[in-house]
Length: 479
Image (cartoon, rainbow, N blue to C red; front, side, top):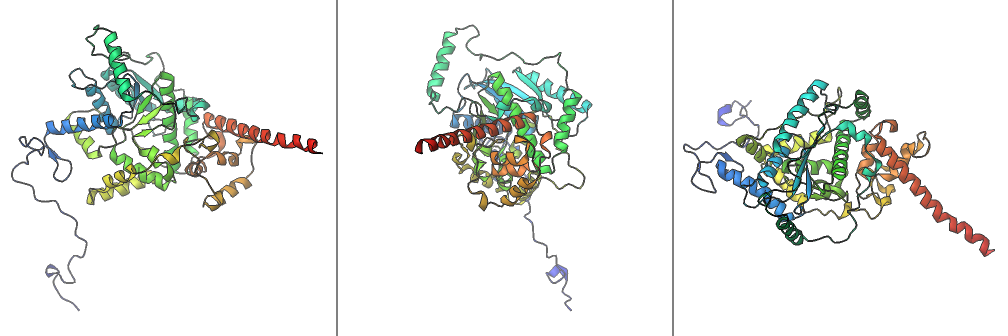
């Protein structure tokens, strides 16, 4: 029997794998890597130590460089900032505020608006808690001086069916170049004269909001929304449903209010998590539009993600150092003994790897940069997914693992016309088919989804009938 002492590395020694340990702290503060004069206040990555002033310049430059490099937001355009109250979207709002201030050397030239979607009903908040969160958020929105819009998730149940169709902006006609747009904007500013010194932008200073309107939707609408989410079978499908309703509600606000772009606050960390999550959900063909800088699948409204270069750590430091206010919403509640969603599992997996391997998030993010958005483009309505508006990626259904489930759906008792579950399947891409199977009864689906599905099914039947009519007319003429 071995009697070697554990301290000497014998059998009694600790055989657990050694974890990487932090280097002992320096006796004197590290200098800033940029200015070399001030003491470093934070270390973003190994060797990247910044003082507060240089870190602020670095953060601001990163945001401006992202917009300048892509040049998709033209001067004078109305841009809707989608705010959740979280760290990333709040930091994005602060960057826009500073970019439009009079003291900025090179000012941003677009006209911003803000939107906040209240999701408290499905996040387990009581009416009193929703009122409190809305009051806090409205205070932050009013302080910016920008036009703002408060929306409730219940309003998604009243959306028109046209929200599931691309707008007229996807015509294929070449628009003006960025340089021409800048020249036209400068000329327009000069023609307006010196009423305000030429420093203001049109559309600022007016706030949108009806103080007489009720703070919360009707209780019947809230109960209808809760029935929709309670009917969903898995937490993964619940997350996808919430994301779809939120996106459609923001898109409808942008269309009705005349916004050409929607700006969201996904960070690099969130983009990396979303990339692997969507890959696991079967959206591999659409990763470029789901996680890229711009998403123009909606035609008339483009979604841009200017915060996708920032790590969550950078955003947290910026908000802490420069007192950026945030309003944190609770996560979606899970049913008893329900497994966590793929979204949460992937988040834990990546963040756990990031602790031991600090390049994990950036590596996943850079990999997504190499993907092409071409597979997501649909050539016609019949080739476009009903829910996500991407191209139908179902080429040979007999080769897919989903085929047995489609057969089972067809064997189930069907309703009349489009109200059978099997009638929805050909309208959906592979990933949306998997989600649709877990959304519960058709009666609980949002009315605009069912209405658009019925329209497309009737249109497909009419097209098929029109193609069959000439064949019947030709037969008598041959005899």
